[in-house]
Image (cartoon, rainbow, N blue to C red; front, side, top):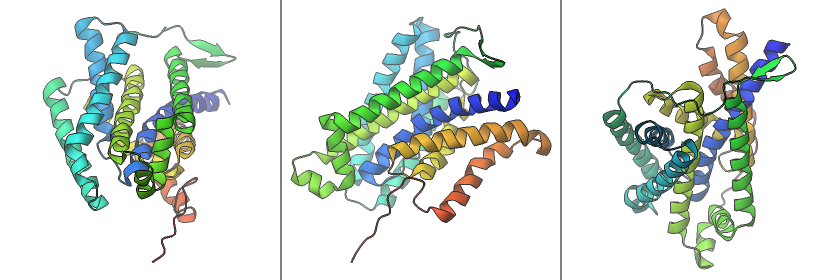
Length: 294
């Protein structure tokens, strides 16, 4: 029972980070109907920038985090303006293919700049484990969980009550109607890409503090895609719940089934669960069913 609870806590923490990164997929899909296959590279670049500021320039973690988030937001703005804006009005597949190419370009830049070696963050969080009964939790897990839920709460309030958030929701619902009301769809696209870069960077920095940083961290982008699809690509609450489901299933699979088969099963399980659920819920758990009349 203790082992189960330990795996459950680990799954919730990792799943909450997945949910945060999945939020980037949802925002871009809601605003442009496209899937960003460069999400993992956004995550990786933001993480490396934060790590470099700490290790090379001795900048405190909080300040380095804020600078990395600002850098990520600017990166999202610039990429949307230069690379993706020309595809507005073009078939969605064109923008999707552009993000695939963008992923390769950003991955190459990361490899040239930072190499392939695994790097670790200096000890930012206390190493004294926290005990909840017989369950032992590393402080970095608790801080990660707290930071993720604070950010998810902030973004939920932002989309629900702020003028810009409401404009983003209106654009996601009907771009033509939003334009007729004076909303700049181009600006909404840029903000969506900036926020996607920010949430990816935060997720990468938290995971980097847990497992270290190397080029393979960008694979989280593809791992999180099932999270977004499972919850519904147009649903922010779905991204949160989908992240927790995938994180918990992955943790329990790694703890109980991987030892029986020699490992690797937990990497496949999210996709297995995704296929099974989509067989009964094609739009995801919370996705909206769209009916197009002609």
